[in-house]
Image (cartoon, rainbow, N blue to C red; front, side, top):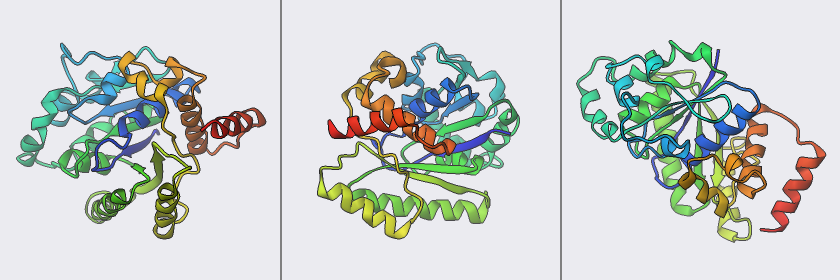
Length: 269
């Protein structure tokens, strides 16, 4: 049975879609059957895989509102072992429609249950808000991965998200766990970055990923070409650090070659 991971943070611009796209691509390249579900009306995850939103017949909106089965909304991307339930702008109105629907917090979960055996990993790209779409993502998931910036304003957002996770556990999904907190656009040269990491470590010990994703031009460029960074520039720092994250999630030790590449990348920061 596949593991379902929501990637969530109510703050925008923290790398949720970037993480879903690049982590899924790495796991797919390793032979793991991977599905991404884009529940953000901006559709950044969809764009990141090179899928044109214009003209899509079905999307996550149709799945959530019961207009279609999730199996009929799954697209095969051009990337190895990666499938996608795309998002369109219709999702912007889904919050209002879901309010009136029965089991409005469990609609995505009921759909995911029908196909989770077909995949090893299912990632849900949640929108930057703690509304019904994000609650559906958290209720449908086994774990939540939290990307965040190493900035002090981000700490307040993390506190709010963790409060929401506790509410979801208490009311809808008692088995929900924290997969980990992922620092993105990280710059180890800044004192504030290290201070924020230390502060998060106090409250959430053992929940911070060792891998921290640095700012990287190639990582920022890749979505405009509709490719995960490993397919856009496999030698880039962005590709390396999402590989490291993938290995960490898989619980793998780093080999000597990867350790050397990591040291070289960090020394060039």
